Image 1 (tube, rainbow, N blue to C red):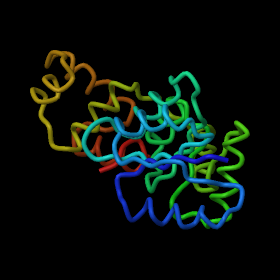
Image 2 (cartoon, helix red, strand yellow; image 1 turned 180 degrees about the vertical axis):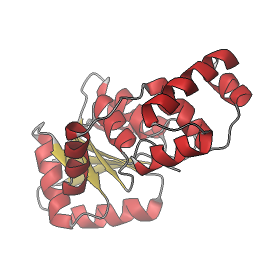
Image 3 (cartoon, helix red, strand yellow; image 1 turned 135 degrees about the vertical axis):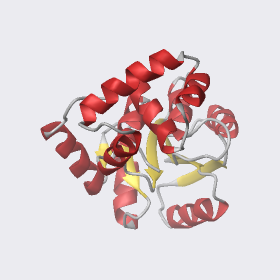
Length: 206
């Protein structure tokens, strides 16, 4: 089974490579720290499974890279391997085409089983991630749109209406309309409260 590692931390890549190196049926055929290098290397090496982190420094993140990888002619399965476990991260990754979502804190045996399941095209989630998703399904609450999530993420960074409008190429009036909807869905009436509730619910991360 051919694997490709995508992570912007060399030490993490070395650690994963060392773990996988002890498995007789797994082989690391390439690794990358950026989205551009990942897509190029994966297209060239044609691995069976890509282990994808979500944070890749500057440039496209792991979610966008997953989308690009899954669009390749001989697309491999993508298994997200990350420290992030917010609802927004999980949903975005799966929507982008990830076969599974595993946390870096998982035991080696769990990682190996996840890799093998991903190679078979099976959906695989870490127990902690699966619990979050089950809770989300049981009590989804009013769903925020992708645009509303983007606005919340910018709010969390301290952006004002004018900065949000500029970043998203929309008008300030549109930003205000979105904020009204966000406040209503989250049951809050201030920007700070909206960010606090969004973080508590795992909709965004700080």
